[in-house]
Length: 475
Image (cartoon, rainbow, N blue to C red; front, side, top):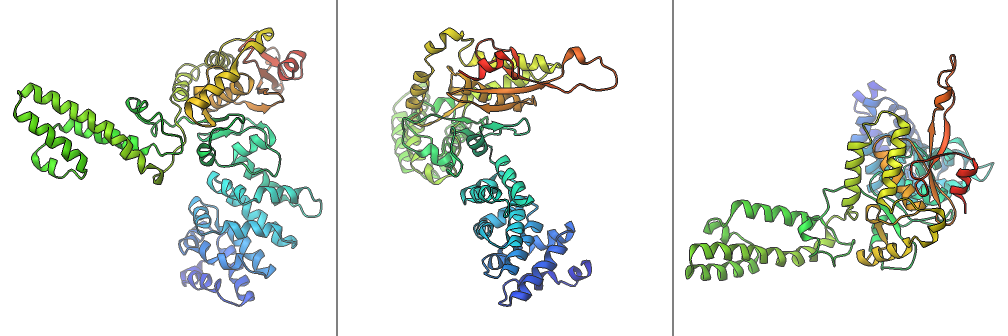
């Protein structure tokens, strides 16, 4: 294989993929698959835009060509760059269609390729959008059609699209780490498509259940001084314009009123008008008054710049709604709870922290008086969106608190599960070693599972399947 590569055989092999002879295409794809087993050769193959070359074979009607092409995708899509190339050139669509094949080998190799491609979140989300998850679910229900790769591909797609996994299954394990951009849409039935976050943010306000968002990225949030001015701008608009405005305003404040050449180079005609008007007044006034006039002009520029920036912002990159409160939560728990050595103490402290941020302890008999629905409705109206960042919620019940606990626990490395129940219930499960059995010599006792109380007695650990735990989980 190395000899073939050194003889510049890779380029001719990739060219053969676009020929009209099915046998030649299948043989070339097989050779490329065998070569891709070795990483140095795989990198060379990827550099020749192999994903573009595989588009034709993936669209072929010949099952042998389909099978070998899918296998080549599985062998070469091991890297993020290769998966990005496949996604950008439109290769995921024909690959997803091959899952429908009645040929066992084509279906198996296509499942293998989907499993490899689902290795990163962007590609996994796109595959789910194309219906790969629904097809794999259907395949796995059939004893004769399912295979190990179809089952592995299904699980990998879900594990790299946690928003969809939680909506469909109502469960996130301790290894399912919530990252920024995760959102809880609520329960959906299998086969129902989950809209991407951007589309949900752009939707008109409705009376459906609020969508909860986890986002700790603060670098894209608008500056505090501009929040009031941008309060009427919905989540659909890009907020990168406000950050650039902040940079521009900072540069102006440090440079002061520069030389005449700087003023001439200003591209905005409105700015020149304001400056010239200010300069005229400055001639007939004292020096101190001129400085005040300059400051006033700067303030006017900032106010006038906001609508101009936001008008063109939809064409710019879109960002999820910022959540400054959740950013503060992450900072606080990292500083105060992460250093705690004992895991049990960490869990109890975090539980009390979460409860405190979402309305505190609630006696069972007063649960019906806890007006969380009104609070959520007010937030939706205030934000003009169906998507609510989790840090905005100050009156939360079971499913709000459980999501916040899981999101913060994942940030500081405390393993816990998130389980959705009925009637707005959700809870977190943790595993702890029994302190009383630690002294047994010869074997390590298995950890015991507990439910974390975030509502009635924040910080209490309820042994799973105990009476207390069942009362917490069910009405």
